[in-house]
Length: 77
Image (cartoon, rainbow, N blue to C red):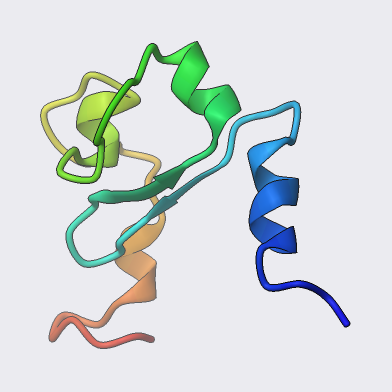
């Protein structure tokens, strides 16, 4: 039986960056330690939007695909 914490342990120890974003708000919900170190992120980052923290942008990136995940009513596609 796989332990519930095993996936998190694996992702936390990958030698490359992984992050998860709330599709409706663009707010970061997870940043693995590799990516946090690369961008100098310490402490709570969950109030930051991906484009602010990772790309120093002022809005969603032109190549962002998140908008394809939700309908105009905010429902999953």
